[in-house]
Image 1 (cartoon, helix red, strand yellow):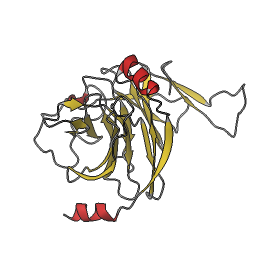
Image 2 (cartoon, helix red, strand yellow):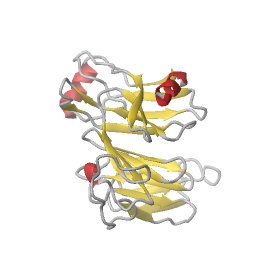
Image 3 (cartoon, helix red, strand yellow):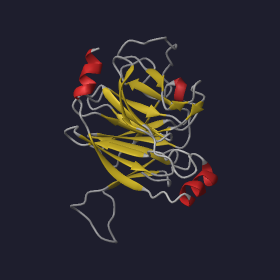
Image 4 (cartoon, helix red, strand yellow):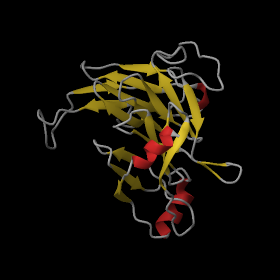
Length: 252
């Protein structure tokens, strides 16, 4: 997925090297900012709030991007991150203003763009779109950070990990609507500012979490220069997980 408003699908068995060409290319209405893959679909978050998320069926070539309407709570800004449900029932989108929206294809508020938006509810039942706040710091939760990465826990697909510009990673139980675990604490640069987590991914068995720490440009050039000047090095690391504590939290 690229800023040139396309998604390229590659078959490494068919072509390689400098002259390699994609098996197919899908045009997007806007720049691609984030991507998730879960066969047989690709989900792309685009650089315009109105364009929202675009769903591509990879079984057909050339494919066509189908617009999906975003929950009204995250529709003011382009999505920072997207993730498809492992079972195919919907997707999640993370926003710049510390929110995650959970969308179901069967919900009256979800589906193709243009569908009527459902009225907001205090706590919608499972299967209806909802959103929740996250990655907010301070006594009054007034320091708000973007949600830069999302990843479903493979062993229990109702558990979603979120990573943010605050440098923290949390695990959420979407069905019970609460935080299950605090996976990663913030790492700060010499300036005292947190170093963002722009990417996370669980291993297939769910016993490890890969994560990257890097400036994500959410603070602009000044924050980038401060992070670089403090000597922080971009890195990728592995966190070993013990889900036994999560199970106790779920049961409680």
